[in-house]
Length: 83
Image 1: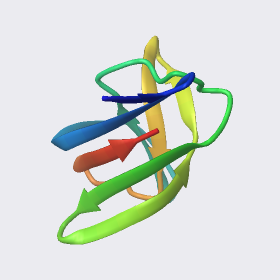
Image 2: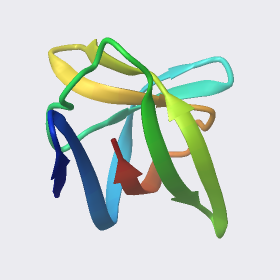
Image 3: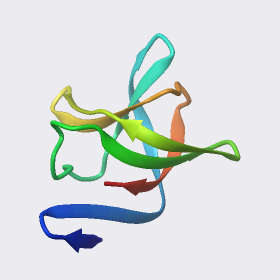
């Protein structure tokens, strides 16, 4: 974890996150922690089947748990970075 002022960035060692809810072409994946500011898009890096996705994603509170919305519907992906 790296803290800059009030921002916290999580650099993770490929944490596998599982699909919580599927919606058309997008999936909500369960986060292992509560993000600092879920009211803004998070910067993420995710690995899926050898492909790397780097971009922004929304964090939502889904079914009583924090989840990140990604353009995938696989059962599991690897979370590398979240800010």
